[in-house]
Image 1 (cartoon, rainbow, N blue to C red):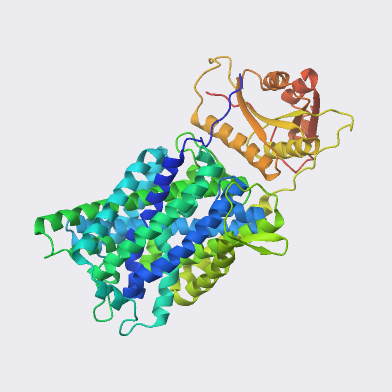
Image 2: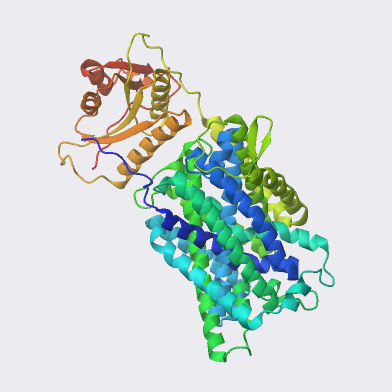
Length: 631
């Protein structure tokens, strides 16, 4: 009996999505506060508020775009829908960089927070912070390779812990440390500070609001993606912006500007939230301050670890979306039994994050500002194109169903365009230019990453062979259901593409079938080896992806049988198929057989029409669907 192969499961409700969203976005303050303060000084809360308003506009655009497209992939999917594959790739690759750099920065900051908690100053100095960061990334990658992350189980705990720590600091800070005069004095340029310094802080402030694409990429796992994902994007962004600005207000009043500097951006650059606690010395009982320092240090490290782990989930889901639409190698779009997402994607992301940490140590002279500048390049480029894509879709597809509609709108010509995107797109692009002008990481590391991506994209596209068109069937033939046996490899991919073309032309249903041939010496329900199960899952997912690329829904089934040909015929009978699509490679014709035994059996016993595509010599050198035995 056929069984459906499972991939992403819709198990996340609105509460779980909100917890994941807040936990991911709220962790950013542990990274960004010191980085922004190093340039903005007393103007840090104002800079975070202004960029926060831009971020809310971006979140509104995300909400409309992802709800309208109704797929995973986040901004990449929206850009691809609006502008085509190249734009989708550029956005996806830029976000890929953002994920990698968030992982690198989170791992780099973990030793600093741990060092504060356990009073180990050496962990907060080079090279031990670099060593610790590499160890953290290696541990996250290794664990992720052997088990699937259950984001729902830990999301609520992390979100509550994050909210509790930040709320405690805000309440204590406002009650004990807050000074209105310090805050007002900080709203002017400090001695020696110029507007160029404030301008340089603006792109970096986007680091305070990381994780929005992770929420969008969870759409395939949300129970009500078109309703819950937009609500989560907007709600979580508003709450996080408010919390971030409050923490920043406490930070600049606790550690005010002195002699053209603030300790937030110097002594506590890599652990700014823990640095706020030091201001309570002499204001609160000493044992309480020591305990608070340990709590904030350990919880900061834990929250950053969780953010790095969640980033792995987000970026591998992004890679899955890009791979299934032929923007990245198809190996990155596989489902795995243990890890769900592709093992290759997990290793690639972990290795890229390690390279980023080492680059910060060697090229950036152990300065996190180097990575922060590169992050600003990627995320601002993605935000700019995303918002332009939302505008483009309003014009290009005015009748597209939009479960979430960004308001207010401005009537321009025959289209009503969202004000958030109209203001946000040019502003994001202007800040992107600002990042290029003011930060070395944005001028060096990030463009090199983009250039590498374009080489990858060109290679993937060059490797795609032309899809065979749908073969002409008698115009009187009624084709309601099409069955295509598939396997990994070129022949299997071409057969699915042929079947998709026929199904699209005739408006037919399409099912992709993977047959596992079980030797007679073994029980028919013998456990499948991991390699066989992985091949089956990857093959069927590839079939689904080809169908989605051409707007054809592809059903999938996996069956066990003693004979592949017999299983294909049985499935055709069960499905009441009107057409079976098969392929024949040249190697059978070299043996004077022309067709393999499988094709011969189907041709002889099929209850419906059969299309067999015989590839010419030198095109493909692999056979038809070969038996996959459990043993």
